[in-house]
Amino acid sequence: MIEFREINLEARAPDATDGGTWKSIPLVQRIDPLTRKSCRILSGVKLQPASKPELSPITDVGGFCPFCDNVFESVTFPFEPEIVPAGRIRRNKASVVPNIMAYSGYSSVGIYDTTRHFLELEDFTPPLLNDAFAVMVEHARAIRKVRPDLVWSSISANYLPSSGSSVVHPHLQSSHDFQPMSSQMDQVIGARRYFRETSRSYFDDLVAQELNGSRFIATTGSVNWMAPFAPRGFQEIWGVFDTASDITDLSDSNLVDLSDGVERVLSYYNAHNFSAFNYSIVGGGPDAQQIGFRLTFRILVRSNPDRYYRSDVTYFERLLDEPLLDVSPEEVAKAATKFFN
Ligand SMILES: [Zn+2]
Image 1 (cartoon, rainbow, N blue to C red):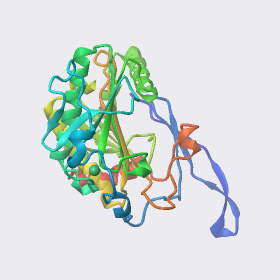
Image 2 (image 1 turned 180 degrees about the horizontal axis):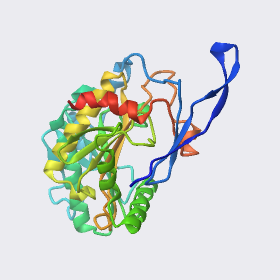
Image 3 (image 1 turned 90 degrees about the vertical axis):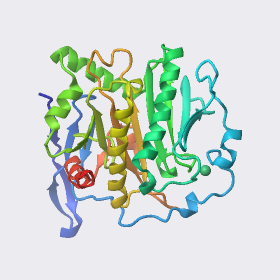
């Protein structure tokens, strides 16, 4: 059994609605059983947006965009021929090209649709998502074939400037390194520890234990969707794969299942006036299969873009690595489930 640890921190605070009378306020700290990272679920604080922001001042084409079709082929570069003989990887309107910003051994940027400068959340259809994920996976396989030492792969995305994105044209990015990212290592260390202690896959046990519980949302084929017990950010939802352990394991049908679920998560966010998100899916490294590591697509919302918006990243998230959450995972799962039915 995976132990979900929750600690009552017994917060004392003056109640502004009752003349400042000191009261006990429910506050729980939850610890993620895999990574042992903690977060706090607050009560009574709701930071949810009441309306949708007007995005056109940010998203209207104003000047040069490297990902728009009119310049895309001339301002982006082909891959090295020993890795991608054709130079470019395209699938329908999606494409992947080398990232000129070198943040990994091999860094690439995928564009969901080079013919549209901006995609609203409702424009992320399953086929569009599927094409973009497919070109990223094809590129990952091409790299792994030539550079088998680059065993740590991931695919991630920022969407809109408030999520950290520097280019508005919707895109996703990948990393291929001989060293893991910090959270990638945390997950793998947790999975190795669990396997050593139980000879079982943490992720398989997690799905089995959460199935039909208050945080479980739905299954789309090979992907199990749930709100995590101890989220790292707002409205976080996970898609845990049933067998795939690395980015290069993802089959065509895995990607169809993933795209189906991602479209539903984005519909849920859109219906609740969220507009910016980050997601990430990390491979489990060289012994991923042996330790029962499973790919987990993690997505969360960020503050809506606004001239004077308040970033949802505070010192708690960035320096203490302890997110403060105003909506519990159980509430997120309950609200998101509707979008899978
Ligand atoms: Zn563009």
